[in-house]
Length: 147
Image (cartoon, rainbow, N blue to C red; front, side, top):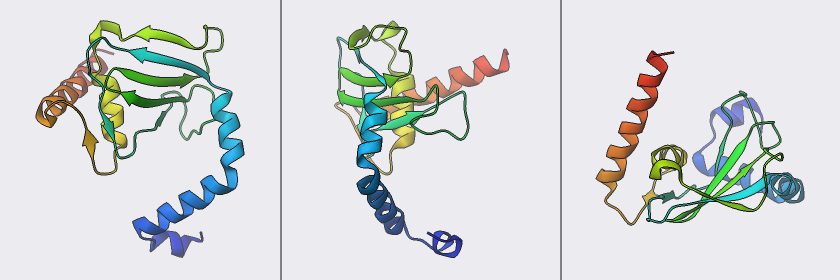
């Protein structure tokens, strides 16, 4: 896509380019995903949300980054009690179940919510979830002030 096409592109055009890219690079992307360490974060209570764009790719150490960039983490909510976690921590055991620390799903739900295109889905009231997300952001801001 040339610059003028990019500048004047519609959301549908971006989706078409994305689908074409995925189609052309499906095997490469599959290999990159399979090279990650796979784990499940679980909660005894249903706490995780999902969205219309549930696969979240984050890296807090590098900008820009991609799937292959060291430190990139991929999360995918697979149920209200399970979250698939892919990372590069190969020194740790693979294919493990890790309990949700402190029963605090706020940071995961924040990432999923930020990645959503339009919709968030949950068994809970959306006001309750958004209140938790705001409190998570407030906590991050307080931590940043103390650094």
